[in-house]
Image (cartoon, rainbow, N blue to C red; front, side, top):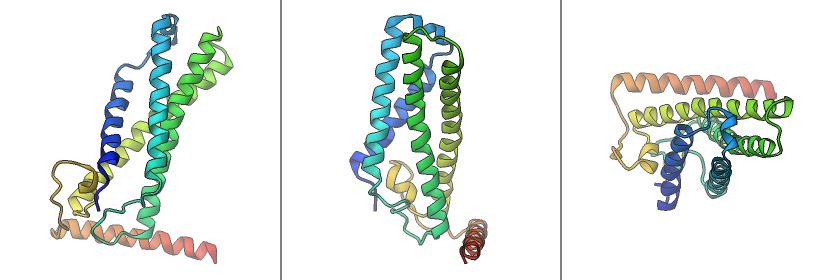
Length: 192
């Protein structure tokens, strides 16, 4: 089952907004002396935050990997959900910490421990977002190669997926399932 048109629109619009935010980011907080830039950054961060939170509440009712046309291992779903949840966390921390930086700067706190803490959270969130998005995109491409149907539910191109029975793909997928089985077995034994 494909995602709704609204879900796809939010997803792809958000990507454009995220890339724009990364490209136009403020490299030196002293640039915030320009009041127009400061106001723009606050408005941008607020819109960004609103979209992330809105997307979270809209998408939380959709089961992770709901569009898969093949059975998905329970551990695989847990890992996918963990990556998605982590992305939401860092994508909320990114604008929130940016707003704190702007607030502190506007209050005359341009350095010191509070500003350093806000900047550190902002940098952590930015770096974590790069890593998590790279994992997300890699997983989407891998899913497309396997032909699970997940790619087609969100991506408007190359979406004529069918399960891939190439021997190498099958071997990798079988190994992946064995890893998930082992992880599930370990956690089952821990709970006992």
